[in-house]
Every structure is written in C-alpha cells, then in structure tokens.
Amino acid sequence: AGELLHDKDAVASGERKQIGNSSGSAHILSLDDRKNMLVSRTKEWKRLQQHAKDEIEKMHLRDLMMEEKRCDTMCAEWDGVYLDYSRQRADLKTMKLLRELADRQDLKGKIEQMVSGEKINFTEDRSVLHTALRADKSSIGSIVVDGQDCVEDVHKTLDQVRQFTDAIRNGDIRGYTGKRLRNFISVGIGGSYLGPEFLYECLKTEPDGINSALGYNLRFLSNVDPVDIERTCADLDPEETLIIVISKTFTTAETMLNARTMRQWLWDFMGNDKEVVRKHVIACSSISATDKVEEFGINTDDYFFKFWDWVGGRYSVCSAVGAVPISLQYGFDLFEKFLEGARSIDKHFVSAPFEQNIPVIMGLLGVWNHSFMNYSTRTTLPYAEALLKLPAHIQQLDMESNGKRVTKHGVEVDYNVGEVDFGEAGTNGQHSFYQLLHQGQTVPCDFIGFIASQHDLCMDGEDMTSHDELMSNFFAQPDALANGKTADEVRAEGVKEDLVIHRTFHGNRPSLSLILPKLTAYAAGQLLSIYEHRTAVQGFIWDINSFDQYGVELGKKLANEIKDHVHNARKNQSEDVDGPNPSTTRLLKYYLTKTKENESACSDERSILSLSSVTRKTYKDHFPPTPPESHDLGGPSGKM
Image 1 (cartoon, rainbow, N blue to C red):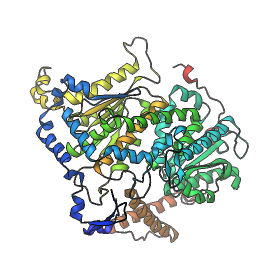
Image 2 (tube, rainbow, N blue to C red; image 1 turned 30 degrees about the horizontal axis):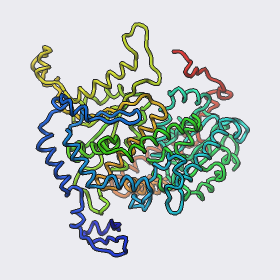
Image 3 (cartoon, one colour; image 1 turned 90 degrees about the horizontal axis):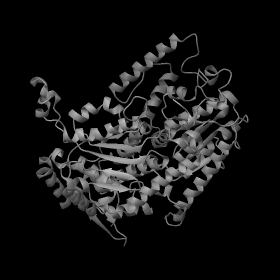
C-alpha cells in the first residue's frame, strides 16, 4: 500500500492529496475518494450496524446469560489469565462479524507491522516497539530500525540498569557526603509517572516486594504545584536521596522545572558544587536528548539511562522509565519478572487466533461498545487495592492514544472513536460511582480479580476470609449490572408502589471479567500488556494513529504565552496585563491583584514569590536531628 503524504491545509480545504507507492509513481486522491476509504463505508462495518439495530437492541442480557453454549464459548484463557466476556451485549454472530471487520482492516498484518518495527506512527515517521522493551535476548538481531538492533540496545540498557541499581542497593555507589542512597524521587509526568507508579503500588504489598524494599523509599514528583514538592521531599535527607529525572526529550516544562527545583534542594543542603548533581541526579531520556542531559550537570557516562524515539511515553514503563525507579526500590530481579509477564502476553497477542486472543477480543469489544452501541465511557474496576493506580494509567493509555479525530487517510472520522476511561479499586468504587453504573447512563465495565490475595485475612468469628468477601462482590456486581431487577421482583419484596420505579434496575449493562492467579510482578506485566494491545487493536480498527499526541501540545503553547504575561506583570509590579481575550485578561488581573495582597500580608517575612530555598520545612523539622535509620516493619512475618 502506498504511504499517504499528510497536509493539514489540504485536509481543511478539501484539496487533492498525493499518494506514492513503492515503485515511486504517484496518484491523486480527492477528498471524496479519501472519505470512501473510511472504515465506516465498508460492508463489514455496515453489517455490524444493521446487526446492532435489528438484533442486539432487541435482546436482553438477562436472556443471553441463560444460553449455555454462548456462555461457554465467550471466554478465553492464556497463561493463567482467564477472560469471561459473556456479559457483553453481544452474541456469537456479533463476534464473528467483528472478526470479519478485523480481517477487512488487516488487523493481523498491522500487528505484525508493529512488532517488527515498521514505522506505523505515520505522523512522526517512527516505529512503535514497546514490545521490544521486554523481548528475550534470544530475539537479538530480529528487529532492526534505521540500522540499529533494537533488542540488543534494549538489553544493553537493562544490563546497565541492573549493574547501577545493584551498586546503589549494595552501597557501592554512595552520595556526595559518603552516605548510602536510600531515598529515590522519580521526577516525571504523564507516561513517565503513571506507569511506574502503577507498578510501584502493585509491588508494595507483594511478598517479594515487601522484603526487597525494606530500608528504601521511592516517591514520585509529577505535579508542578509546589505543594507536591513539599509533600515529596520535606521529610527526606538530601544526603541520602537520589533524584531520577524522566523526560523523553528532557524539555517537558513541568518535569524540568521540578528537576531544577530538586537540584536546588540538593544544593541548599550540600553546597553549590557540580559534584552534588553528578552524584545525586540521574536521567532517563531519549538518546536524542543527550546534550540536554549533560547541560543539566548529569554524568552521562554512568548516570544516564537511554530509551528511544520508538518508545511512546505512555508505553514506556518497560523501558528505563520503569526499570530504574522500580529496580532501585525493589531490585532488578523483580522488575525482570514484570517484563516476563508482559512478554507472555506479547507472544499470545501475536500468535493466538482472534477467537481466543484476549487483547484482540477486548479491543474488538471496545470498538463494538463505542462505535456501534454508542457507549461513550468505560470503566476499569480492579478488585485489588494494590491496583489502585491502574485505572489512571489505563486512562492515559487509552485517551491519549485514541482520543483522535483524523484517520491515516487524512479525513475526519464519521464514527465514534476514543472512549472516556475512568475507574477505581473495588469495593471503594461501589460506594462512589456504582450508583450511576446501575441506574444512570450505561458504562461498559472491566472487572479484574485474583484467585489468591497478596495478603489474606481470616478473623476469629468470621465466616469467610476477607478475600472471599472481596471476590463475592467481584462476582455479584457484573450479574447485577446484566440482570437488573424488574418491577415485579421489587413488588414481591413488599415495596410501596410509589417506590417501585425508584428501586427498579433495567439491567442490560455490559461488562467483562478478567481473573488471574495472584497479583505478582509477573501478573502486573500481563495486565499491562493486555491493555496496551487492546488500545492498539482499537486504533488499528478505527484507522487512527494511536501513537502520537498532538492534542497535548496546544495547551502547552498557550501556557508559555500566559507565563510571559505573568512574568512581565511581576517584573513591572503591575496588575495591568493583556491576555489573549477579555475573559483570560480578567482572570489574570484578579490573580495578580490577590497575589499582591497576599505578599503584603507576609511583609514581615520574605516575599512568597522570592524564596530561594526549596522548602520552608525540611527533614530536620520532622526528625531532629536526623531521619531514623531503622524501622519496625516485619515484612511478611509481621503480625496485625
């Protein structure tokens, strides 16, 4: 197939566009021709539309759930991961039609293109190789991009991470004053933060994680809000702290401001010596940012961990982005198990037939629910407290990837793409937003549960373990959403007639259930890979680019312009400011005026706008004269 040459102005004006092919010749496609290439114009798409209208809309899950053959068929299993999707508003015909759509969109070919390193990120002319980040060493030589052996490069970096993090944990590498480095602050935002924090929380209560983390303290600094800095570093000893700056380009505004602040924090306590930075700050960034990393003062020979332009931020947790902070906190061996879990699902994704392929099934159902059933939201509901940060990671993964409006053919979509994703760990979510799930708008749900808990409890006098109590809710909620409760069932309970309508549940609300053996590092890797590939599948079907994020740029550009206005007003000691429009001008004037009032209220102290020290409270205020060097954590042998 020829490669489309994109031109935003041409798209807007409806001009013809040129498409070249491998022979070097070219032909011209009009806007109408390109619109005819929309997936919504295909017979496979139209069959699904008709099927939804004529058949599925007339069915209720209450009845579908009683079809034994359907229920026994609508499940899949791989390497301990069990998927049940029988509570979707779909039947066997639906799945057949969705697979036909996948074939029409050459889903198999697109998957192969992605994992082999073809440049499927067509707007940035980049490969998409997060799968290479967890490839086995035996795959060295199998993926070459622009003359570089990707898997070999990955393992060189992983070996570097192992060597460095082992040296830190063994005490072979120490800080500027000779103290051991026990505290780690990971400075990053977006994909440089959400993925690693999801994994950090998973392992915090995993038995191996508990043991390996004893004596170490990992924190994440993402928000440019100075309060986040105060919360992150106030009770830490800078002499025992290592700063990890994670930014693909080393230009991300929020991250670099926080990085400079952390550098100043170190200097405040240990003196303005370049060696302080060289011994207490490391970087995870793209090779193309090497010069910027060096300019910051970081030792690029030993304290710089590289990743590549073919790794998107939200897909980067398996790179140095996740490897460095997680290995510092828990040891590299545990991170390696995480990679092995992700690799297992990668193998399944590439090789399994679509009717048994877990990420493909979930992706196709995502397309079905959003584009054909018109459900605009979706929720992730892990029944494991250790997965409390997974929904936030999935939110970025999906919404930044598939929140698009233009296809690879350069025309705007005329069908729904990109759901709104949210979620919460169960059972907390049940007492937060499940009311809406049961009686408000319909929201397809992903329930995630585990056969065994990381730490189960059985209290004297209780009939069941705490984990059985949790999982009873896990099994009950999907049935309640699917079946609902009829008015007659409510009346049979003796409810007053005027309350019957309020206590009736229509049901027919779709969900799927994922069950894994236990939440380990390996299982966390499996979950990550499943959701990464689900996202890609939906983008492949919709013909959009799931691997760029131009929507992030506009707000950043405007923020820089606003910063100039604020800076000039501060410099001139004036509230007179010209914003880009009357509304913003009014808000800026209000902010500047009130800020000046706050300054005068603190006139007996240094201006809050000119503090040179990073924090007013320091670790010395929390733990005079020094932080505690021991703790009473018992690890897995501890008692309640």
